[in-house]
Length: 437
Image 1: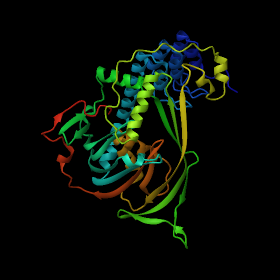
Image 2: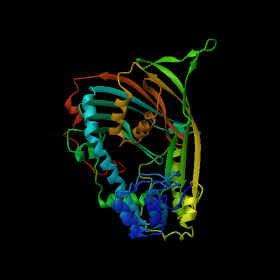
Image 3: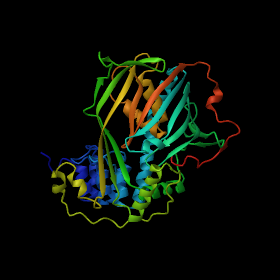
Image 4: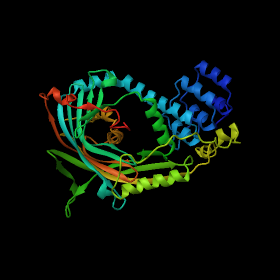
């Protein structure tokens, strides 16, 4: 049975007891990332209740901003709902800093793994599909050409970003160079316009404030892939005599499996939005469904903080003993939310002839997660797959959209030219080409 002393950090935050919170933190007896019965960390509670001094103290002690509660919301999402611009800006900075620190901690090991992996050329084809009528007709497809030499990676692509509101297309190249300093290691090239942009770890004040404006004027969205009941069953072929399906994919034989039990769960919140915001966002989505996505969907204006939500009358005892997740809808701004759950059926082709191992692919995808659709591929490949390499796989990228990813070619090459991994001398720098990266 849950008691009032189960979550001392949470209790201090709930009562806005800064002095006691400081004492408990100094004792080092309790995990600052501990989740309560509703999946909230102490930082979640501080943000939801608007207890700013507690929030600042928790962040100073390294409280994680990425952690999600049982409904899939992290503290930044809760801050957007609360509507205080200063808090949103602070948590956005902290989230980026914590993500950067985690990557840098992992960097030496990742670079060594890349060095140990042989040099190669690989082609990966993306074919996006939707069960929503007509949408599949206007979705993009893409063949990525990937070159790897030492600790350097080059990706030639026509699709660098894919999100709910837009996609960025063109003749594009992504360069990663692990041999240089981190702040110079990531570069995007626009080959049509002969410009390049370094993917900076640091944002300017203007860029950060613009991102805050976008967050405050958009739905808060979380998408989770639930794979607890996932199963892989051998696909069958043949009409009269059924047998396990085994076919060539490219030049590699693969065993086919039917995938079932994957649920895509999405939640949207918009209690922080005005009616005008909702209508503008709806128009942006409709423009995509008609086949006319544009890069600058939002014309953002500086957003002021919202009035704080009504103060909750819930007691600590009521909160900590409430049904799991129930209290989350009773604290903060009254919820305006929408949920969707869709079961996902797919096939995956596993090849034991493919030269690359799954662990090698995951290490490479860790470098490529700046490209959002590669991040989704990495999440799915991390599942416990059948034996072999996933040479063809269906990956959910949005609640209504899946991508069929096919590894079409793979060749080890020890003669790749160093010029493949350098910025051409006639390209000029442009710091705003890929604004959302």
